[in-house]
Length: 168
Length: 86
Image (cartoon, rainbow over all chains, first blue to last red; front, side):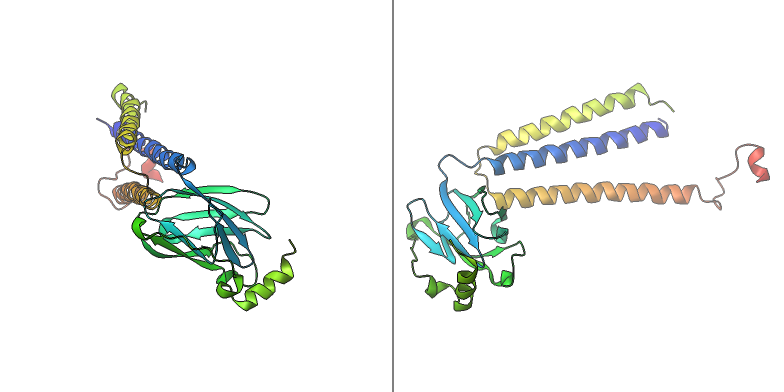
């Protein structure tokens, strides 16, 4: 065998690896794009500078999101003012929150505990404070809580800033 | 230099095998629930292994070529009369 044979083998192996990379990525994307039919819908609304979550049964949460381990959830993500990005680093979730647009992403938490929710798109003065807490509970102890009083969970400075920006 | 038939036949063979392996992997994986965290990090590690392996092979080939065809290599003698005059 001459040099050319080895070169063609090398070219073939690299092409095969690239094809494998493309196919594997496509396969993961395919799963990420299709939420299970029984996924519970959680409407995620971003606004300067906090998160609001609305469950299928109408219960709302602000600054905290209670989910149940092992249950698939589909997030419908939107924004009320500027562009934000809904990010749960520990669960590898990230999706833009864009005004007038409903972006979708799904996840099935497989571990219980408390996780960080944060904004991953610079959205203004208090962007760095735009965080929320994700609480994933074991199925037996899951008790979604509704929070109606904004003031208890959102800093006063954020509320004041929000009221000056949000008109709707 | 034209590639041999053997070398050319390797490419579709490798492509076919890699397609089959990917399909087989996705078929067997359907039974397990899809966990974003596991799938995305798994893909990341796979791509890193492939990228660094190809990169290492490429760097090795470059190092070999530089070493083998350096001017001071005794094997690197001019092949024809004209080259000796330069």
